[in-house]
Image (tube, rainbow, N blue to C red):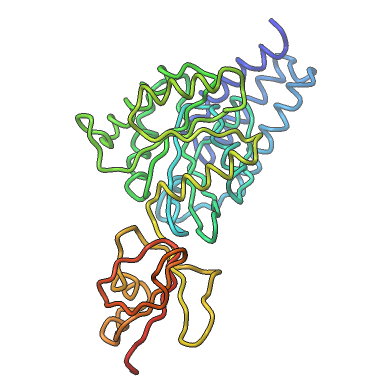
Length: 327
């Protein structure tokens, strides 16, 4: 057995041992693993020296985490932020953390086997003034159901606007897809083939050989939207950001004070189908009582400064000037 193969299986073992451990229990297990490596004299090998250093870094990070009095630390408790929230989940090592680093402002540690995500991580993906919160859920090990992860998928999904399965185009497509659908069914996100959640698929590693054929096959076996990408291709990453924005079904509304220019830096982001009234609610409920009418400019259309009422349905990139009664 080569050193690389030996380390590969050792890392699988580490991932299993530390699964679902937190705090002092995690630290003790990591210290036991380091001792085991040294007892077997593997610490004399360069790759295992690096492994020990990674374990020591994880111990240090765990010690830094604050202990919350009165309740257990919850690694999945992430407050919602931004203009939309998308949760990612898949099996281990399909590239979720690498993808997170590529499309958000995060710097998640990546690496085979050991650095499987062990808690929910959040980052912000920005697309044309829209901020999308991306939640990276822990991956499943060896295609085995993990009740804790299944439970957390359901919980995080309920607070998200969309849930994305992440499928690696270099691996067995049927096995990944069937397993993840099964987990969604176990989590009661899919019931009798139906769902009330917005579900989609991100297909990673689209730069590898045969990825095009596997992407086409994935499209054939599912009715869900499939978004292919490669972290090595900047154009595909930008396209993914655009697709995630479109998938959320939201519109950007820019406000324009009377006799002034529109603010194109901070749009109001609303679900498609929302009206002037919904926009007023987001600003301040008192604006509804004070509303007289609004003027709307719609790029690339004949609607230029048109006066509209409170029930007018807004479209993406509309510019709105509100005319209110004085308070």
